[in-house]
Length: 166
Image (cartoon, rainbow, N blue to C red; front, side, top):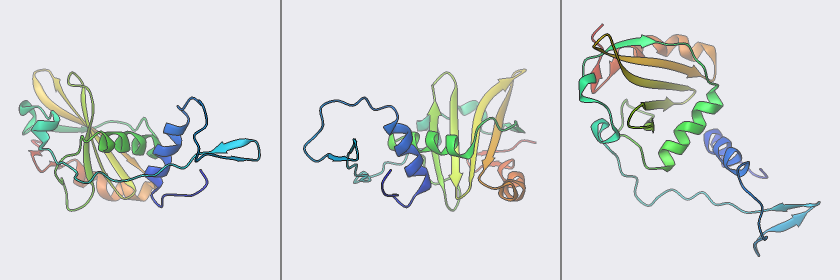
């Protein structure tokens, strides 16, 4: 990447996307520099970002008053940013969940996942059924450990549209 976009999440998503490219015939605006091609890529936001309700994104009705359970983090902050960026770019964005940040749907209809991201924090919410009871498993990933320790208790209180039962 020759120049940053100014947003680390977008930079990381761009690099991940570039690694999947297969080089074809060079385009006229590509430049040959020191034995490699440089291709310009523009990131233009959609003219209109359509917000969806959690239900439109696939949040199950059964999980309006679930129990929230913390699960261990299995991803890096960069990996979570890539998933969030893909969900956002696919238009799977929810109406604002908290005062700031983004809420996007990922996963499938059979195994939905929802991500909330604000600053250096990302949280994955997975609605599941355990012994006939609605449970939301929450995985918190942070760019710095102190961010997680400060915000984790607040995240476990539940989402505004699905308050915690516990």
